[in-house]
Image (cartoon, rainbow, N blue to C red; front, side, top):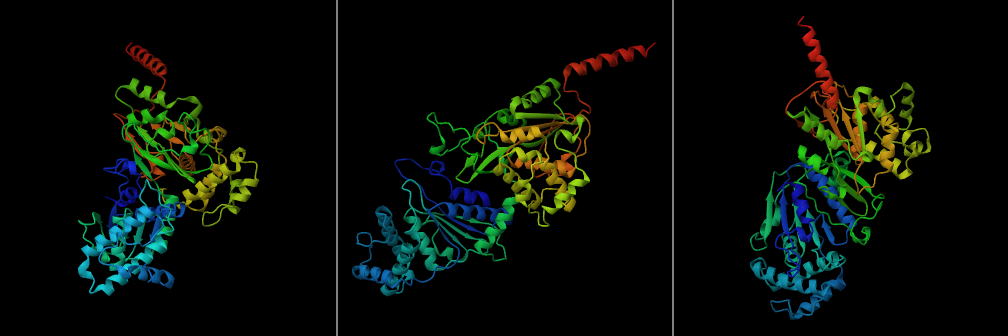
Length: 522
C-alpha cells in the first residue's frame, strides 16, 4: 500500500469498507504507517489531510506529544470517580464524554487495554494516574468532536509517540475510532502495541532522516498541490459518485450550475483508446474520480496524444468522427491553418505584461480584471480569477521540458489572456457536472509546438477541457515541450504522413495517382 492508498483508506466512506453492513454498524481502522514511499506525494497527502481536518468536525490531530493534564477540576473529578475502582470501568458512573454510546465504548476499551497491558503498571497508583491522564486527554481533545453515528470519528497522530500515547490510541480504536499513526522517521513506541490484538494494519516503507514537523509538510504539500499532476486509471466504463442531497433535484440529478462556485481541479485520465470513445460524450459526473465538497470539485479529463492510425483506416476515421461530436462541446482544429486558431499571436508590445507578473510568478489580478481588451474579459470576474490562479499554478509547476524563463512566462500569460473567442465561449458555457468542453487538434503535417501553446493547453486542461492531439505521422510536437508525465500517449498500428481524414479526398488522390502512373507508361 503506497502513500495515497493509506490516506485514501482512512478517509474512505463506510460503504467502501470491507465487511460493512447497515445492521453491523460502521467499520473502523487502525493503520500504522512508518516511513514513506514518495516524499512529494506524502507531503501532498498531508496537505490534503490538513484540509480535511480544517473542514470537518470529526477529526482530532496530534502532531506533537500530548502535555500532562493541567485542569485540576477535571483531574479531581476523575480522581473522585475512581475512588471505588475495582479493576473494571464499564459499569462505573464516569462521564468522560457526553455521547453516551461512545462513553460506554471508551470505558469498555479501557478495561480491555488495562487487562492486556497489566504488566506495564507497577502498582495501582501508577495505573490510576494513567487512567486519569488518558481520560483527561479524551475529555480535552475528543469531547469537542462532532460524532456521526454512521461513520467513525478519526484520530491522526504524527511523529514520535510515547508509550502512554500509544495506549491512548488503542483505547480510542477499540471504542470505534479510526486511528492513523504516521511517522516517516521511525516506528517509535507504537511497537509496544500488540498489532494482532489491536488489529493494527502495519505498513513499513523506507525511513527518512529529515525530521519535518506536520505543518512543514503541509506547506511543502501545498506547493506540490499547485503544480501536481494527478492521474486516475479508468476502470471499464463504470464510475460511482456520492452526491450531496442539497445539489440534487427530485429525480436525483445534479441541478444545473450548482457546482460553479467551487474551485476546479483536473485529474488526468490514463486510458485505453476504447475508453476515450466510451467516456468522450459522457457527463463528467459519470467519469472516474468525479468528486466535490463545499470548496472544490475534481473532474477527470483527457490530455492525450494519439500517434499513427489503425491498419483499418475506416476504423480510425470513425474514431475521429466520435471526437468531433457533440459539436456544441468540441472545437476541432486542423493545424494546417496555424496556431492563430488557438490564440492571438504574440507581439513585442505584449512585454508590457511584465508589470503585472512578478519574479515569483504571481499575477496582479486586479490589473487584469480592470482591463477590458483581453478575450477572457467577457468572462465573469470569478472565472477570470480562476484562470489567473491556474496560470500561477502552471508557472509554479515543473511540467515543462525546459524551465520557464521570464519571457516564457509573459508569453504564456499573454496567450491565455488572448485565447480564441470560441474557447472563451466554451468556458462560459461549461457546467462542471455535465459534458465538458473539448479541444481536438489534428496535425496532418509535422508541427513544432512552442511553450506558449503548451501553456495554453495546460491551462485549458486545468479548467476542465479534454485535450486530444491527433498525429497520424507520429511526429514529436507537444512531447518536446511538456513532460511525458502529463501526456497520455497512444501509439497505433502505423505512422502515415499527410493522412487525409476525408476518405473521398484520399480516393480522388489515389485515382489521380493511378492515371498519372498509366500515362507514364507511354
